[in-house]
Image (tube, rainbow, N blue to C red; front, top):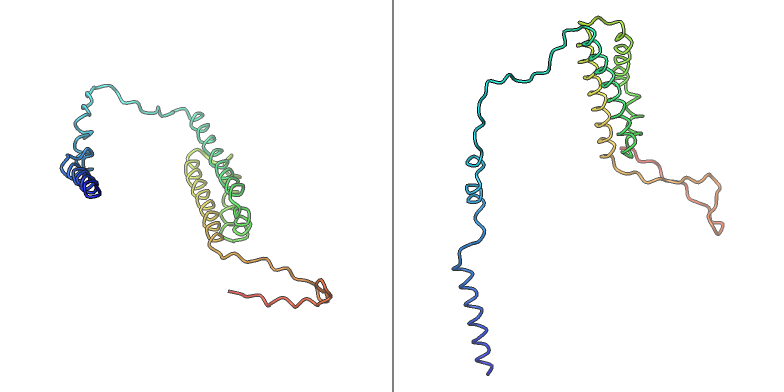
Length: 187
């Protein structure tokens, strides 16, 4: 009886294995799937028409141009402040990083130049405003980049455990004097 059971199990396993080896694969190779579902075959070329393209109308009115420049200038100023505030609020190291870069002379130069541009904006002729917009955008990108770099630098610093220093003459529970704290290690 045992021999028959073993033979039947062996027969079922060998037939199942032969079925798996000899059957056609249901899943095609990745290349075959790409060829079968080629988007090139299913896309029909667009009809070419002689319709005029829609291009944003160029404002010829100086007042409209001045208003657009003013909106862009305000957007750039506010966007820089929003980005900086979001980094400070959402990143635990953001505030510390901002305090660090605010003391750097390079960052102070960027801020001072931005303030100069903001002060000169109202009286600037229309020809200079495009250059001022480009420069205020460059200053914004540099200052945000400096903040991100400082955040990443502070993330890479090793964590320093907080050391609680007891004043001289303080004793621990049981009257044993507390040992002096170890000397700080500078890297």
